Image (cartoon, rainbow, N blue to C red; front, top):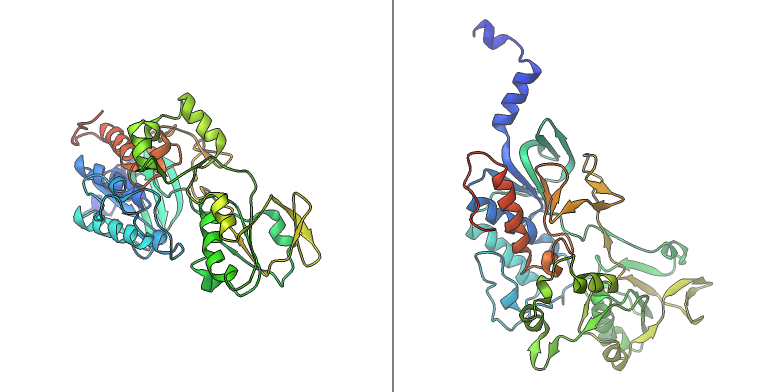
Length: 379
């Protein structure tokens, strides 16, 4: 071995070596947003890797409750380059979605590293250091595609409930078999809360146990079908699903909160679900609602949503009070992008069959920033 080979490399030399070894792009998250982004990165001939903490592709979908079906018909559920393999007018189950995502990664031979949780993301001298449970990775660009459903949220009042009341979040609910016999309170009247309450009405309600749904803010509700057509047929034909965040319609929709599709409250009442206003506190042995009424549930199911967790992103100027600072997915840090955020660009940005548009746009921009690679063909 020569003296030159034995000599320790200077910091500049080490950085040059790191830059040569670094991937063009690392995608964090192998859900629909990450896989759609990977498809477009492959189209540009970029060297990339998708990493995910889960043991299998589609794990997040398989972990949701057993009876879950999509609100969007199969014709609107495909990612770029591969139609969803189900009759166009049917509503896929959560396991069918998971199977599709696995098949998508296999079909396009996408490089995915599973059981690889990202613990910290750093940026220095134009390189991103992605620290993972499998060791550090380096990349010139990073796409965060971890989705909006990360940390289950329970309101503060949950801590005041007596120990005799069983509590579980909708993230842990799988079927009525998870809920012991007795009165049940579901808190949160979004899509998940209504579906779970309706399902419990068919089991616990039918067995004589009271099922109650606590409704805080009523979101904008739309029927699943309008004039014989599925709602998403109308939303796509009228251009609602592609209205951008700066449009007047989009601003009004965002102000109203999440859409509730199907499961109108009148149907829940007909099924025997007791509708109560917002849960405001506890009383000895029970809970109190905003109208002063009292309930004494044996089980509370918190369908109260999730919050995003970006505490692992150790880069200044990217996250502001828990919210990503971005322009159509591109952060203020060159080379760092996001895909799959709710309302990232349109109403469809976080939806299975529509996330591909944002994924393609972001991949095109990253390709433009990567010298020597295939140039994007789309605008």
